[in-house]
Amino acid sequence: MNRKTFLKRLFQLSVIGAFPLLYPWKIEPFWLEFVERKLSIKNLPEELNGKILMQISDLHVGNRFDWNFLIDSFQKAKNFNPDFVVYTGDFVNHGSTEDHLHLEKVMYHAVLGKLATFGILGNHDYGAKWKNIKSSENICNILERFGITMLNNAQQESNGLNFIGFEDLWSPNFNPMKVMKDYDSSKANIVLCHNPDVCDKNVWNGYEGWILSGHTHGGQCRIPGIVTPILPVKNKRYVSGEIDLKDGRMLYINRALGHSFQVRFMVRPEITVFTLTQA
Image (cartoon, rainbow, N blue to C red; front, top):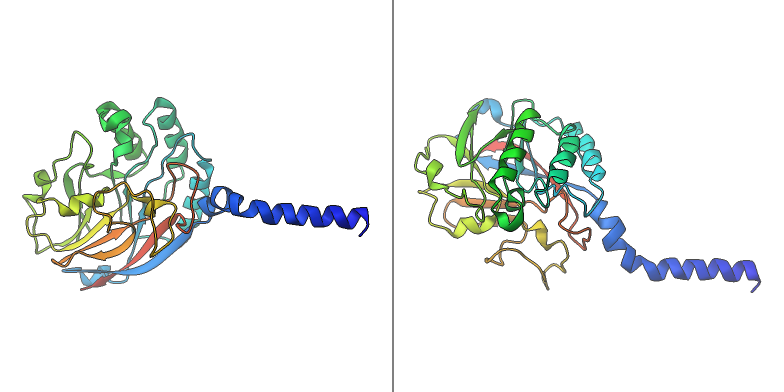
């Protein structure tokens, strides 16, 4: 073996040896998956059958990863030409002034629905200890400027589809009964709720239908069927994907587009592309 061959082999072995360390840090956190699936809605108007609803969750704009990845992801998402877009919380990571400035740069490129775009807040949008109401108000103002209607314990109907938005479970403003007391089962309803643990609270007033959540990031690192070491919910069933709550409610947990920390293993970042169908 000559010197050139030796160095080449050494380099190859170094790359192979470093791959298990580089993959969850430099590859998977930026390997976006568009998850396409159907969303069957009771009372859905005929004219909305086949329309596209896109869910984007947990951007976590901050200083823990390169948020230009979010802008690039938005550009790709626009190719789906969604009719509705919903953002399900945690737009920033710390709620700092710097985070808010960076959020403006990101949301300048926001994906908007042709018919409507709605958003709710997550716990990180409330800053330190989830109690900074001023941070949440600033974020709402930023998002509204870029065409996102925020639903803070409120509901709004668009083209026959009624969106119900909860404030975050851990925030000072959590009060879902403020909106659920007016729940109308005759409408085509979708609930936006950042933290899926709310599904176990007595706040639903007989609701039957879909709940779109985020918050868990799918654990960010997991071995499916074996272990998910870090999951920020009490109910450890609430990892990611579709969950039948067995009472007429269906839960979908998005794996998040951004990250609290730049590490993922077997939990790729996700944007969900739903095709609406009549139940």
